[in-house]
Image 1: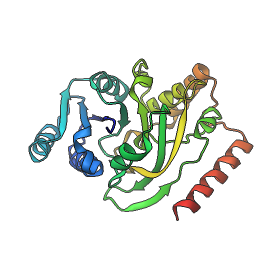
Image 2: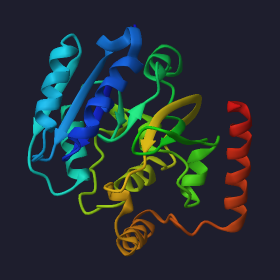
Image 3: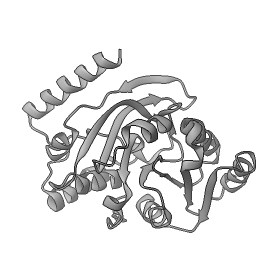
Image 4: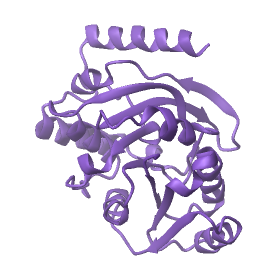
Length: 257
């Protein structure tokens, strides 16, 4: 029997993207569409997000799509609420402007999810606002060690996390820019097991309205907070680790090609 997968989607005023996001999840699940649940945690959007999701629910009425709408203070708070409602064996954090590659979820549920690890991570495709491919972001083996060295070695949209591992994690609601790095830091503790999967999973979209494009000063402050909390030098990895990371990523790129 295949494991169950919860896709957690925080959303705020991304009605123009979220239809594509949800459809990509369902198509990616393939024959395992009944083994997934899609939990959309909306921060009380003022756009057409609700109507878009209702239309999707009507089209894919055989797929479990849950809509929750509550005012929140941050993406991290939305993620915490979505996680509390999840019932799957694994979770995938997918922002409402992101997608997943065709049949990537089916592949994970059939082949990769062997229950031996806490974290499974793959490669990420980058696209622009219109959906044109920009690059493939290869992810290296030994990503956990690179995380501990202060290098962002995985992407949330390409990372499956065992729910029983993350269930007691409290999303840091003070992190506006780097809630994913707080989670990665927490997951990199010694007791967790990570596995690299040779698979393009998530699709990250670059556009002008995303949170990623906001204040560099705020990013720097949050990285300092994370360093103090986890003893990880985010943004300050030493030269040897940076070179090793590039070498490992280059090796992975050769495998993809």
